[in-house]
Length: 272
Image (cartoon, rainbow, N blue to C red):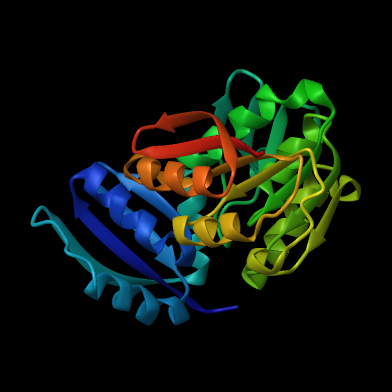
């Protein structure tokens, strides 16, 4: 584990910061917003990749970028100082692991914040949880592509989804995934495969989630062949709507609806 973490500070318009964040989300381990300052946390080895992406973007004049390093121990203190519980549709409550008091139930999800992205605070995660709640009465099997911290698979377990399969490529997520599933007493309900979602070809599930960066979703859509599954895609911006709609229609998907929260978009669709 690294002794230090990189922090990219984005100062300025929050909407612009959110759009910039979406371009580098694949490399992010977490983020915080403090007024007009957005702090994005990355591993040391990700910094050069992110800089290359930033150098190829036309950044607005009202955005200022600075870098800093923090010690690993400070990272965890920072999360503890800033993490607040999240309640979604009065059905699912997402709390930090230090709130755990053996009161396991179907409403409370405990997540250890820090090393992997996925604490329920981001709009795309919230949109995904809302969709899981919406479909929870159907006794669906569930595939979670790009599972990260495991939060969506854990929510699926709490909502009584069956045959839950999680797929994640980033081994940085391993410790948190196993910790979170054990803490929530659902590790026996979730099977994990440490694989690249773009190499995944088993879509024999009722509901398939992919809360992943847009370019990966685009490639994934082209890989999906015959299946009866319903797909929920997020990790998208509202400005991506027309592009995604055209691509889905071209690949014989029927779009049920789009949902949005602030700048972020979710699409609910099915192969036809």
